Image 1 (cartoon, rainbow, N blue to C red):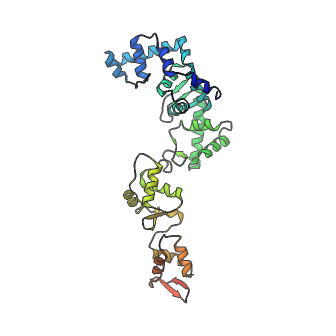
Image 2 (image 1 turned 60 degrees about the vertical axis):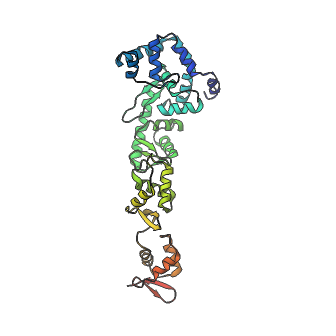
Image 3 (image 1 turned 135 degrees about the horizontal axis):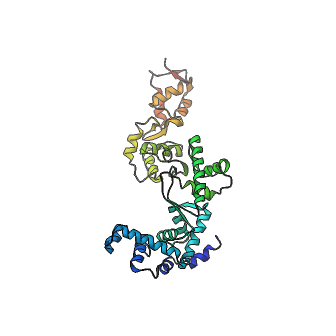
Amino acid sequence: MKEKQPQIIQEVNPKGEISKLLEGLEERSRDVIVRRFGLQGKSKETLEKIGQSHRITRERVRQIESDTLAGLKKLEKLKIVQPLEEILLSVLKNQGNIIEKNALFLSIQKKFPNVHSNELEFVLELSPKFTKFNETKEFRHAWATSHSSFTKARRIIRNFIDYLKEKNEPLSTEGIINTIQKNIDSNLRKNTILSYINLSKNIKKNPFGEWGFVTWEAISPQGVKNKAYIVLTKKQKPLHFRKITEAINQVGFDSRQATSRTVHNALIKDSRFVLVGRGIYGLTEAGYKSGTVVDIVANVLGKGPLEKEEIVHEVLKQRLVRKNTILLALQDTSRFKKVGDKYYLIQK
């Protein structure tokens, strides 16, 4: 099919083909179809709006639409839109014979920019080669080549969801593919697996390319604290709160923009974060401990006497401060005691 696509794209003329298909229809019927499906450069319109312009009820418009589509499906002229059918079939077959509606349209429009999604949806509704699956609480709106394609996809998705519940942590794209091929169905190709997973409304990919349940904070973080936590986890180093704010907005977890003030105020109250320098935050789980520089020095010396340079070295692992700040902390005789010329220990 891939070898035929260059020929198809030269031959296909969606607007012209659909216009030919609609030739011969009664004027009102043609107008209803064009406006309902948003054909020939028009936007989709509601039954109510079309009914008002024709001075008929919305139910009458629905009946005209249904009767007209039924008639078109019987016409020999349906062969006119065969090039569009072939384009749709080529994408579906490459995606395991089922794909989420928007993903289908996007995939085709990348290769065939002269094809509008409304035209594709019209052909999908008309052609007997395609089966529509409406959106549910569990699955997104999809198109397939058969009912069996959906049945298979649903089985794979539900088995994967069971695995994800047990693992209880996000997976990379490759991780999903390897997991399904190893534990669920070894015959599935990468494109098919990703097409299946994209059907599920319970699974989502975060901006870092990790997949998991939409309810997981690592996938759909709520609030700047959780977004900042993910950013620092990925950066694996302390950052100034302004840099954290920039990273949150650049990643684009959602449409809400974070502000530096909001981030700073949120982080300073959350025990997951430690202020390791002026406006610079690190993660507690990365080994950073709360407290002043004096507290950190005391913690370092809790392991036993150390030389001055050793103390400075260890404290700098915990705090982004100047060396003189650490040396000044060592002068606190109520906390520390110097032994001889080199060593310091905790004052008892």
